[in-house]
Image 1 (spheres, rainbow, N blue to C red):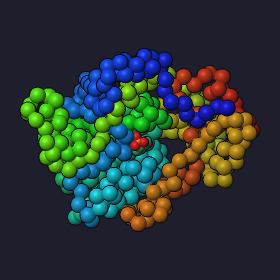
Image 2: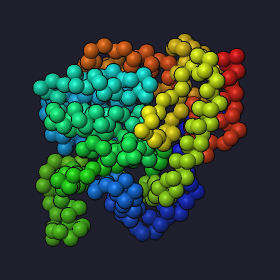
Image 3: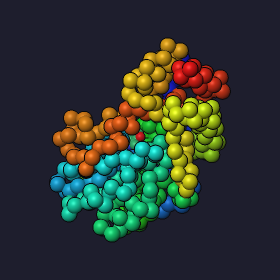
Image 4: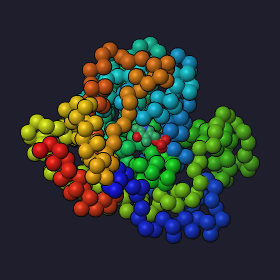
Length: 375
Ligand SMILES: *Cc1c(COP(=O)(O)O)cnc(C)c1O
């Protein structure tokens, strides 16, 4: 069986987990949590980075800090994971879904400004497949209308836009370390940001509404309940699993890119014949090979290809029923203007097996079977 995804594993995880256990520090904010957050701060030149229990929770913290009130509008693509919307819907926001660009499957930045109303508060660019949205345009619009920008960079760790790491371009960046992501701790995430004015609030929300983080830094002599919050700290055991991957983050990135480039090169003839479409990476973006997808002619061709690959024990998957067509999406959101590409392009998209250290044999077999299918 050629799996679609296998969680990243360096071989050193158990040693670090043992250290966490031996330290008798398995709750949140232990040694490994500290190492991981320092890594993000120094690698991505960030003032603040906090591990969370998921990217969903990082988005929830960001939504709270955007001060969402019932009826506020949040602009995002419909082609995304549910959490992008859910984090804002919990606070009463209305979601305004904007169509994607067919080349990157990212939000079409040209449609954002027309979608803005008096109620708009936040724009959420989702960097699909680790390829950046058009952040210069998005930030310019946000500035003009005084909106917040929350980057859903769940898939974008180690990618850049005009040389800047994804997640560092908006007011808040949210990462995921779920098992399906490039760097993983099973379940986990991070919220990152530069503006120091948000630091106390993020720490309080993350620590059950208390000022415990200040207490641990010795800035106050006892801690207390100061505001609303929840429990968004991951166990240090999970952080210990993530740590060795960060130590070889470049190696993992190169390894994935090698597979991505292999798929691209070997499937290019099919694109040249007009049979399929391959992903597009804009010139000023570097990506992290979070996924490799192809686009078939239409939905029925995709179904036939999935079934063909299944016969050879190859798992190829698609995802995201566009949120605006889901029951909750209909209840909590509306599609701005016309759905020209979101549904049509998502129906054609198929993701190929992609993970750290996939073997040459396996990826060659995947390509061979796709070529056979189109023969
Ligand atoms: C994976 C993912 C999430 C959710 O991440 P979790 O860590 O599982 O909460 C959110 N948005 C996007 C675009 C994702 O790919």
